[in-house]
Length: 179
Image (cartoon, rainbow, N blue to C red; front, side, top):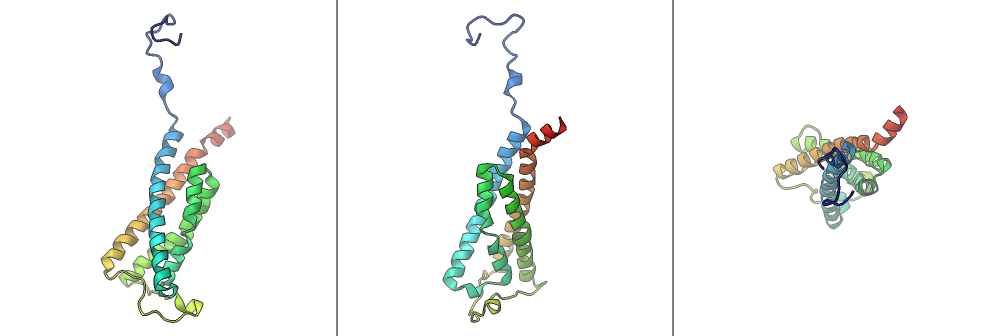
């Protein structure tokens, strides 16, 4: 009965296959947020690589404390990528903790310090390095507002996407507990 030209079961016109073509909601959600998270992880990775590269070239003593805090969360990008590729919520939870404790506060601190609401704290006195001639900040504050604002929005969106991904991946365990 699998041939299109062959005989059909009685009482059907051949259009009863549509109910079998539906994809479960958790898989659609998973694909949607995994793709979005890949983009935000690439953005975080590019900014982290650029900041790390320029701080190595210019000298690590030219960083502000909030930049060091943000760079501390940079390795969690690799954990986030691994969590997406392996569908492991444990890795995504580690990435979420790194974002919530280091990246988001560092972005907020950097934006507030650039706006003048809080002071920039230099990193060099904490590690006994000489004072640098110039700190790693763009010449225009607008460039930093753009980069800081988009990075903060990216991190906040990533936190939401992680929550929704973990919820979508946990559907099977929720269904088995309710039965």
